[in-house]
Image (cartoon, rainbow, N blue to C red; front, side):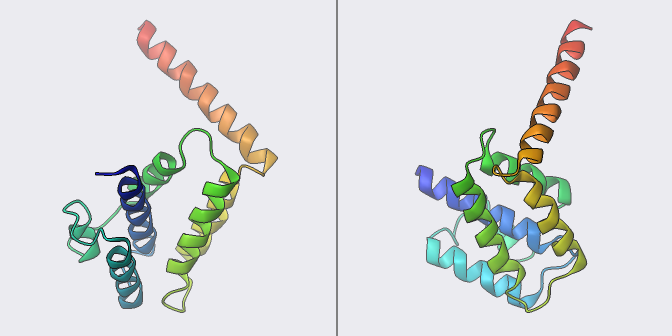
Length: 139
């Protein structure tokens, strides 16, 4: 599998996860996701199929983990804005923005690499995780 296919699959997993934030995938969202998967040539991917056809739900924690994986430790402004644009296309595809989706977009704005507060927060979280890991290794 090529790097671009892997990136597309990661993005689609995030979009699927966001579609599940309100507890159900709307018909318009499902159509949007399948069309995007077809356009990108990954609709037959065995990892995506259960999610594309509503056979498996996605938890918020899975969705957030996928976002962190997709953006990586050094978020670029370009990758952040591309993700935000792709997510907006999905969220607005059904003509209705659920409260969970609006809350998610607000939280996602905290990851903006241009947002100085998000950089400080990310550093604080990383430092806390490093300390926790060091304590765990020491025990």
